Length: 114
Image 1 (cartoon, rainbow, N blue to C red):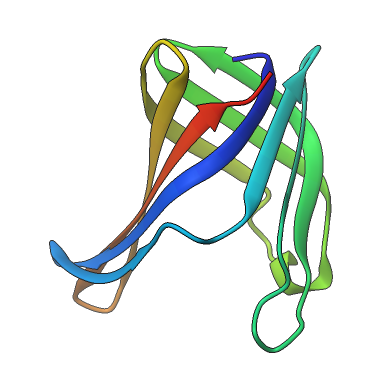
Image 2 (image 1 turned 30 degrees about the vertical axis):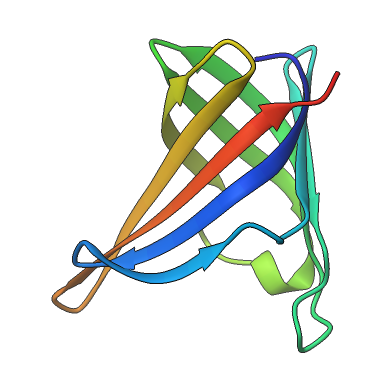
């Protein structure tokens, strides 16, 4: 997983219906020596989104423990267990969460740029 990764595709689904497809979003993740840092362009409201922490990778799962985050990301949850599908120079991660009776999926596809 080590290297510099650039987001190439982003999908937001609700109960398997696609709500958003975005191929222009700028976002990067860097994995190096057990550490992770990621950033993205500011949101339309100018809020910043970035984080830093540690990671492990085992059995097609990344576990990110974020120790420093932008204000917009502050929450009680700082550990993310992310299943991935890995290709030769790309990977896809799916973040799943539920709000009331709706199941959401954020699907991010990254390509390796180094």
